[in-house]
Length: 301
Image 1 (spheres, rainbow, N blue to C red):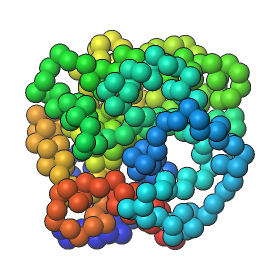
Image 2: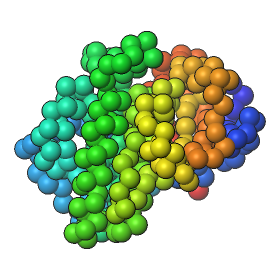
Image 3: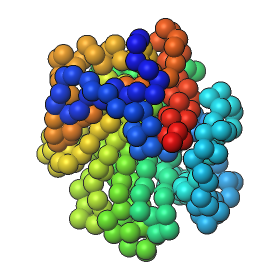
Image 4: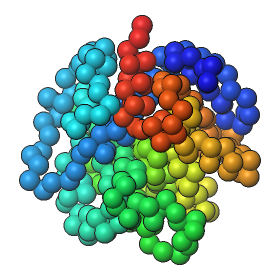
């Protein structure tokens, strides 16, 4: 509990010991993905939603202005300047949307730049009143059943790769677009599995980075065929980013003694903040609190 709020503890891939560095540096790398992970709880799919105006969305907004407007418990999405959401995915794939809705798997795809230089797929975490999210959380205890991890690995990964391929072909994305997967809690576990599961296509890059906030210890690693997973983990970096004292940190600590975080392929880095002085593990698990803490840290000079 002596960790200062302006210091982040970093455990580099393959290491057991944390080192200190200013929180602002890591936060500048992560703040956009933190906002996406929080907004995934506030957004929803609607067929009637108008197509976003990319030019308007890409208007630059100073980070200090974003930080000033960051409210953890607001019902409105946090501003995400420089990015726009794909408003036609999965809406234009009815079969995928039906499968995802059956398991209450909510995800969004965000693009940065025109043509897109970065594409991030973002997964929502546990929703208390949705039993399907709890079934995914407890998949270790309920084996051999369809859940959110099944849909993400076996259906969403295929649909996403197809759309990325099409958008590269039509010039909406650059050929070597960077693909990133993102999520909080259960969403962080899904983001890791999704990176392992992306089907190999010669015209679709692999996911290079995962940003998993307060992530589930369940990552679906062994749910993906080893040959496919081994290809996707080459040069993959996973950032497990969490608030000190959040409830799942203790579960991940126990599992790390059984399966230590790997040093390479994938390289797993753990990044621990201490923005909140609460001793309540549930409170510290909040994505809204963590997102605003990271945004405000990123805004500091």
